[in-house]
Image (spheres, rainbow, N blue to C red):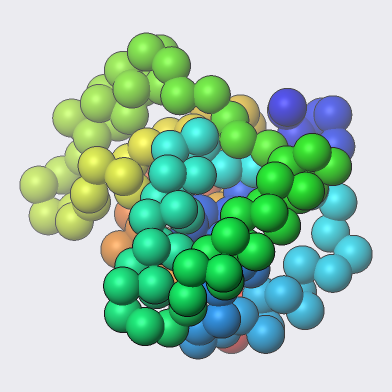
Length: 152
């Protein structure tokens, strides 16, 4: 999927988890998503999402049934292409590594941040939606505008 195919927004896992588990900001992100055409995220975001659901379960905020329900809804959203996972191939890793190498040492960025940001930039998006302060701060270094509807 490319931006020219359909109007999409890049949601990182900090936003996606709010759509599939009740946590701070879930109501706002769910309301914001209404009427939007589609979302994309790097494929590794699915693993982060499942990990986040399991963290909620471990911390007692969701039970096994809730995890199953969330994953069933995710499967429906994938089938309807509301959420599309973007491929994580060698070229993306090389791009992320090159971008990291070029950054000033003062820029705080984690590996997963770089992968999300490089993925969004690679398909020509200009913004990424996140509630992760480090990812939002690093976004301009990838030519992206970091957006957080929860901070507005």
